[in-house]
Length: 210
Image (tube, rainbow, N blue to C red; front, side, top):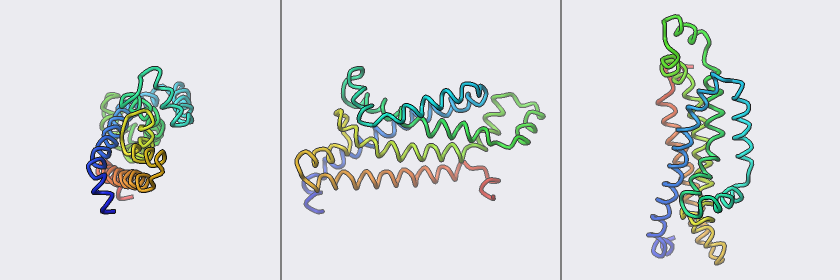
C-alpha cells in the first residue's frame, strides 16, 4: 500500500480529479436536461412514452460501444466521454421525474389551482417539492452509474481512474487494477451518501414525518 502511494500517489490525485470532473459534468448536464424534460412530459403525456422509450433504448447500448461510436463524430478525449455518460445518466432522472410528478397528491394540486396559482407556480411551489424525493432517487442512481461508467472513459483517452485499470490489465500489474477499482468504488459510495443527504434536505417535512 505504502509503495503504491509512493509510486503512484500524484497520478492517483490527478486521475481522481479527472474522474470526478467527467462524472460531475455528465451528471450535471443530465439533471439540467432530464428534470425539465420530465416535468414537461407530464403536461404532454402522449410524448412521455416515446421519450422514455428512446432513453431506455439508448441505455441498452453497451458502454464501450457507445464510447467508440462517439469517436468518428467528436474524436477522443473528455468531450465524447462526457456526451456518452450524459446519455447514460438521462433515463433514471427522466423516469423518476416523470413518475414523481405524476404521484403528487391530486388534492394538493386542486387546492393550489383553487388558490389561483399559475402553471409555473404550481410546478415550482407544489409539484416539484412533493416529487423531490423521487427525483433525487433517480439522480442518486445516475450518480453511482456515472461514477462507475466513467472508468471506461479511459478507453477513448479521457483519463480518469480507468487509466490505472486499463494500464494494469495491459501490463499485467494487479496493483494498478486494484488502485483504480477501489477509488472508483469509494467515490460511488461517497457520491451516493452525499446525494442521500441532499435528498433528505429537499424532502418536505410532511413526507419525512411519514
